[in-house]
Length: 463
Ligand SMILES: [Fe+2]
Ligand SMILES: [Fe+2]
Image: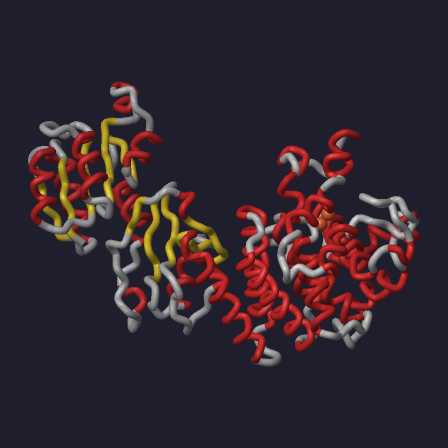
């Protein structure tokens, strides 16, 4: 790595030079800001260490120049204590915004410098750490706005596959390092190292690559599901993450024709997983704990609804697909509800707020109105998932067998999934809490409830 140091103090120049050289860097010193700019015009450098006292041109001018002309160069800024910030009326955040990666305050010694370099360099893992892998480009840091990236759990990627698009890790707000370039072999070793050592649970890709991501995950899921038995956790992880990402997309971007196609593919994968694999139920319910969001709520509803269909012997792929699509989209109407209302629990809503909340099934049907693949049955599920057998539900207050049976399946599963999230319990405890309220027994269809419970006890379905 080529490094420029601009440091007026002899003591600190020596310290920086010694430590960077010891890490294999090729270090060059410069006398002032102007010469730093001239040097970068002539040769490729990866790191600039600059002190705030740098004159002619000033450190701020140099940093600005690098940010505009040479965005991939990392910048460490040093200064005389935090007071130096106050003196120039600036904040740390402003420097980070300007493109500085790290700030180091004087006086600092070997220990502080080592810590900073260890922290930073360890993110830029070189080839030697993972011998035998394709070379890793340590220059690939990019400065781009966070809102251009999409975050995904690192567990989504497994060794042996080629990266379908560029994958990044996030090191600072608006700053990323490319971990795998499109077409690179994804190395499990490197992923595991980042996850375990650096506690980086997430990878990032550019949001413009979103459809490639969904396609890739669908293919990966299909491939995994074809192998019977093994890697059950991996299978559920892939399908779960894919479903959640999909649901997140439709919540954020609205539902579009291409998204409906992808959703159907995902439902097929869930159906295929549930048909082929046993012992899934408990596993999916356990996995809910890690990142509980509205999206994982919807995944659980899809998953449990499909399971319940199987227990009801509605085994045709057509029916299962309709039910899982209905489950996936059941709450889509919530995108139109005031986010503040959505942040409250149902019990916390005022009368007026509850009336607003009750509009989401109808709003959902309107949203999916024009999509051919969203059939009448799917719309009925969306419309009726809050109806209750005793007529106390909404929006229509219909009762008994006037409620479409698949909507009753999604309704009960939705209720249990909400209990699980609110009380932070697994599905079995969710069921116990649910049945401790005797009125619930009459509110839901008994056959459907029985089928749901049988998923936990019936070896045909669960375990
Ligand atoms: Fe709902
Ligand atoms: Fe729901």
